[in-house]
Length: 428
Image (cartoon, rainbow, N blue to C red; front, side):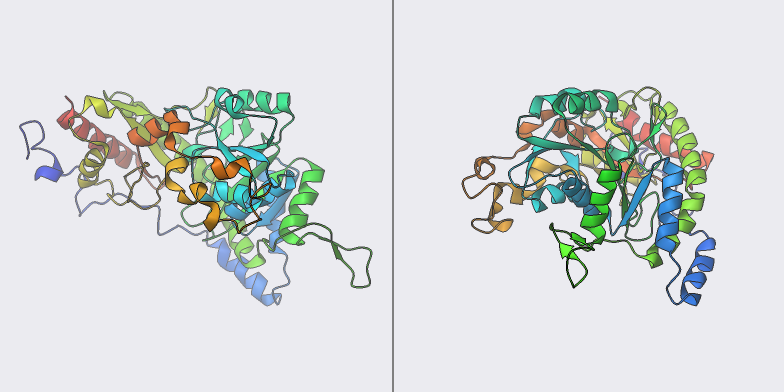
């Protein structure tokens, strides 16, 4: 029932900030660089022999300022490849982010290793050096962090912990293309960086990915695992020997041609994204009960999604009702979401409470194939959000939507007004 304070809200029959006659721009359909047609023609005319994969890897490396790039089928495969290259194996522990997509965790399970979740900064969903240190043990073999929403993790303390324990750091940059931490581009700060080029990502070719590194040995391992299926061209009449387990995870030249075209316009799109999100953050910072997710000092987020904290205790409705009110004002209700058990598309969630298979490995490993053997402590490890209370708080208080560089200055002002309108109406 509408009250005097809420009757102006569109969800209660009021006039929306943006009606159906003036919708906000959406991320999709994607604006595709016309150069893609030229590259596709070159590829077809060459009989599929033009090496667009090599060209893309070279240009992506130049943009990031990194020595080695291995194009991989998708970011899930890239994270798996990175973990394999880091030497993660059965029974090893891997420190991981508790708020992420399944793709970050899959490689740990695929290597028959044990995910151990570090807690997060409750205001931005990123793991911290302190939380990583708390869960690092003698069994830890690697650390895989996620730059949530395109906001860089505070990397220096994490790298300090890694150095102290002699551990490689893998950056999952699926949402963080060209974000910067103290002048360094995400993906080039740790030992290996993993990127996604899937639908809706900052660089999208529908599906694709890459792993990058400045270390020649890691680069060789990445290529061997993802591209050579663990084989080496030596020592047999057949011409190669499979010395280690490997996969067929390679990116292809058809999608690489599109990726090369999209790469050419990515810096301009990211620059626009950074400029307009600064304006939006300034506007939202003025609203009592709304906290834009903080970015580390001297760093820049690229906001794949734009996340903000709703101090829901200050309002008379729950998080999802708050989201519904914003959606009715014109911020696509299919795009606004809470992270925790959200039914909306593009969900993020607390891993410990959403990946049921972690607590019933009969659906993951067959008998005798569990990490370290059937009696491994993994089988008695109980995963729940109680492990990461800050992560639970974050997903219970965060809303976000799929942000786009297509927004005009007026769009940004109207988005801020939608959120302000809901906050003012529901504030206690």
